Image (cartoon, rainbow, N blue to C red; front, side, top):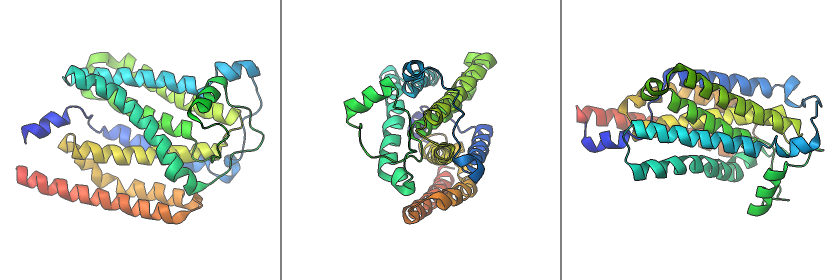
Length: 291
């Protein structure tokens, strides 16, 4: 294999089949369960903690910010073990989380929220103080937005999946051992659960919104993850391209059922399947030429 390709592949993780399959399975079940008629419109019982506490300490922005810091540490450690040079290590450590945050925000505003067009629940509590301050600073306060998919949960799912993919790499397993891996898994899973509960607790989202974010986030993360890691990373990742059409169709059917504007989703789904097939065929031809 070409040395240039080998050099480029070091910065990308290998797809872990157990994590891929369990994540797809869990994301699909969560979406179907939370979007089911008996659950979708429920709200968390008002075990309400003092408003002052929920306005500051229980701010999803702080939870997500903490998880981003841990993700950056994991990216840095992974790139160090892969012998990525210092400049690129620093750039990627900062750039990857920012790409996730801003990429999700842009995709939600331009495509995902208009696809569903579900209104925010009535009677929601005010946004927490830090969240409100950031919204005021970037000019989002008072802006009309839709409830589904829940943006915080969508971003947190991307962050969690990437973090778990990194900690499950062989060199990371060898470097940190089982206790750290379990701690990382527990931390990011609790962050996803915590942010989801906080959004429903404040009446800003319903379980339906959370369920859609779990489904959309899971399939989009693994679709783009498998494609990017196959094209730019280790060629062995291409094996999982053939496993993606079935979950893509399964998730796509449920998302289609709940979408308000079905045409863009059908076009996007056809495009994703076509991209999978094109990459799979191109890598198959390239592999034969290299051999």
